Image (tube, rainbow, N blue to C red; front, top):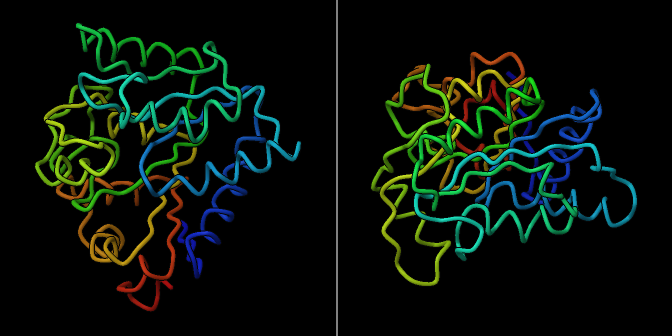
Length: 245
């Protein structure tokens, strides 16, 4: 486990982006898993900046989505895919063949999970998984007490996650289920980059890094991953023991 702490969110995002690019450049045709949400936004902004300055070539990168709300796809403003289209996929000109993302509107959700698994199998391994951290310790839509062995699946959404998720929509939405990569999928990635910012996440960061490793706090399981790096700004790291700073 590697802990990277930056003074500000902007500094954190640049550090994480450069680290991730370095890891993606280690192999040909790498597969990257991208999460939506507030935490990774700065990383994607840095990717786009470097791309527009012709300092980043992503033409051989392949992308797989981390999760999506059930009943939504890129046509739904506020969906995971919608945000990533605006922040990342469109600016980087990611073509359809290089991108595989959950479609929560498909009538057979199990087949959607199989489609994602097939895409990942085709590309052998996720090189880097970029993920954020929920207030209850969830990663992707793997809520507390999700079995560690579970792969891509239909997830029941915790009420806290559903409440927090309302910020992405202009009007209140009923968020009860989602489609997500499982904990086992993330543990199989070569590298996992967990990005966390803000004082509101400080308490759960402390649990993740200093508490018991348990499915009660899914992100804590990542401490057993050999390629795990957590990127924190000073506020998110504020409650950590000095030994971790």
